[in-house]
Length: 430
Image (tube, rainbow, N blue to C red; front, top):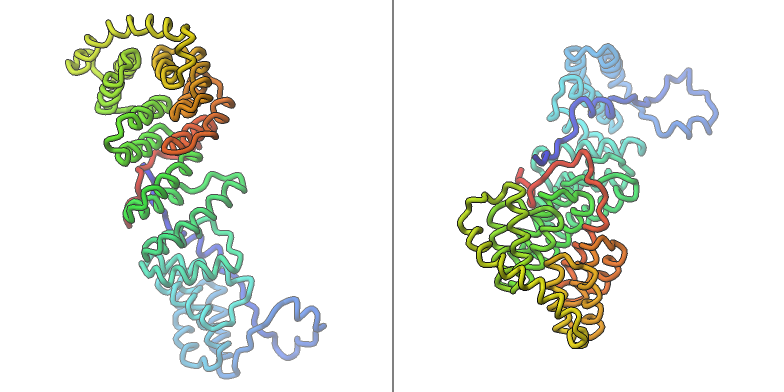
């Protein structure tokens, strides 16, 4: 099952945010070279009135005595007057929140530090990230966007940031912004040699589907297949494509052929529709082969009357058709007629005679048949001619361009990521 995105744990928060603080040194220790002081960065200067409370806060935090720290905070909040004092109160409030694993206290403390303008530059990325993380958990997506964008600008390298930021935009119905974050994160992960988080595909796909931006939805699902080429994900993607193709039977048949090639046919209705389309189109050998594959995969029972009826009508035709196809392929008139060449090649693919089919498709494509270039790539792919098929698919334009791209993704696919789990085509809601 697809794993929902988890916010950063309290342990991780403590590891990153439980850091030291630079406070101005006592007067006796201030005689240091100016250059060294500048390298340390700006130091906080507590007021005289706040100093007693600060001493207690420092000691309690060092001893990890949460009760003493809480008491010292009450005293410190009362005596804090300057911006530096208030920043220090927020800092030790953060330590209390970490010690008690209380995200509400942590979030309040982070807000205090960030809004003070005194946060050290080296801490901006971490503080903004965790503040955005907490805001996301509280479903305050506008605040999450603000903080996470600030963390990104400060150079945060948290791998969870893109997903949180992307989904915050999507939750605000800012689909284009969320999509842009997802695409940037996908490109960055690939460039770094990592498999992008599947949520970078699934959640934008869900938003695009809801917005009825179907072409962009399929583009996102195609990107997903490059990193997650499991059969179940192929099935989900091609099922959506079939829904959009609706009544175009010829396109549906080509889509089922890709589903068959990617081994993503897993249910009886798919085999039934494929067999029916192949029968109606006059490809008895293909119809028989598909049914036999379904039976071998135990998706179709050998006692299934619906399929047995198809087999009874198509098996005799398949034998006669195979003989006729070979005869037609040898005729000069077939190769000279682009449409006839392509139709004959279609039948030859159904009986597995890819070499002859490829030759005829090449002639049909050169003669201008609109389907020949695409189906040439299919025949080459089925024949194991990977590079030639990819080159053929690159030339496909028009209504088969998307299918050609999907075939190219299939042929170029790496082994599925070991950690990748099968996921639904759309994201679960929070």
